[in-house]
Length: 114
Length: 116
Image 1 (tube, each protein chain N blue to C red):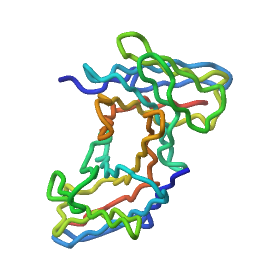
Image 2 (image 1 turned 120 degrees about the vertical axis):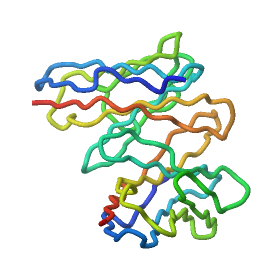
Image 3 (image 1 turned 90 degrees about the vertical axis):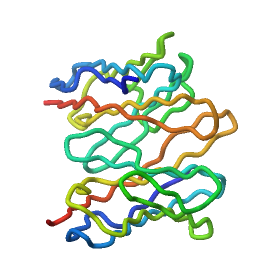
Image 4 (image 1 turned 45 degrees about the horizontal axis):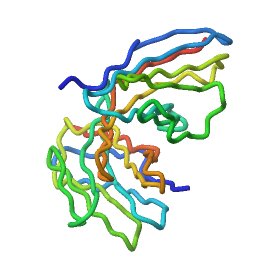
């Protein structure tokens, strides 16, 4: 099976712009979660989608949003970019077939905001 | 809200030394526990997991971890490290809410450097 695929791998944007990141989960996985990784804050949960519905949300401002499509692919959008949004954004998918659930991570999209 | 503490930020060991990385979490209910590893330039990979049963779990590459419920701990161990174990190690906890959804809460990570 192919792993979790994130595109693009690298992005450079300027303050005020918006950006959309894409995640294709492992085939058959219905849950997709997004995390932000920075040297100072570590890995922080952004949100989780299951069957096109956001089920859980972390403590991030409304500029961070996401969605999931019927094929389980997910996109994350950040509007009005700030310098502090520079980070590695990780997507994880899981099958969600029981309480014993494992999340599998993609390689991430590294976003640099100038 | 649950939280995860990894007290060792950077550990430097010589090859063949024994390793123990600490992980403590704060949550009074049932949890699932994980250790993930991030090798330089690579994505996060699952090292091992604990869901229930035997509190001593074995993972890939000779790693193991012990869940001690009374101490809210899930320490990672390896008897003899190799240079290839140089990586960043993350402890993570997930809980299942009443709605069945979950999120992973990560510790801040421990950078492990193995000196040949």
